[in-house]
Structures are given as structure tokens and as C-alpha cells.
Amino acid sequence: APSGVSVGIADALVVVNATPTDAVLNVAQVGPAGTVSISGLDAVTVPGGGTALLAMPVGVTSGEVIVTSTQPIAVQRLLNRGHDLVGRAAAPMIPHLPMPQVGE
Image (cartoon, rainbow, N blue to C red; front, side):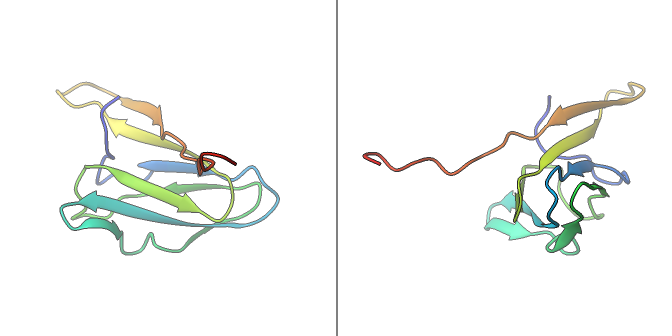
């Protein structure tokens, strides 16, 4: 799947919180200035056992984004297919868990 997100659709990111505890997440954009939180997506609460549909605000580039959360979550990107193709493509975001330090 292509990298990044599709801008201008209501459910560019689908977030699922399977834990019983509310998750507070931050969506950040990666660019020349480093990682910068996206305005309006910097403190999104997803209730325990809930789902959130997130739109990428106009003005956000379609490049790489990073989603961080206070609870384990699953995130799926819904992407425009481009080239005048009908429909959209779904692609999971790749999870990143802290790696143990060598020698632990």
C-alpha cells in the first residue's frame, strides 16, 4: 500500500481501542521540521472498547504520519486508490513497540 494518508475524506484513519480503558492519542506528521502534531488530532480520546474515525484536515500533506496512544490500539488507513480508480484501499499502520535494551 502507498505510504501516508488520504486528505479530505472523513475516515482517513480508523482507530480501534480493544482495551477497557479510554485511550488518548496523538496524530503527528513527519516532515522536514521533524515530527509535528496535527492540529485537532493532538488529544483525541477513544473510549474503551470504542472506535474513532479520523479525518485528515485540509492542508495536511499526504506523507507519513505517526499515531501514539496511552493504550494499545489498532489503526487502519483508508486510502484513495488514485489513477481514477473507484473505491479505496485499506492498509494497517505498522505497530511500533519499545524494543528491549541489549543486555536486559
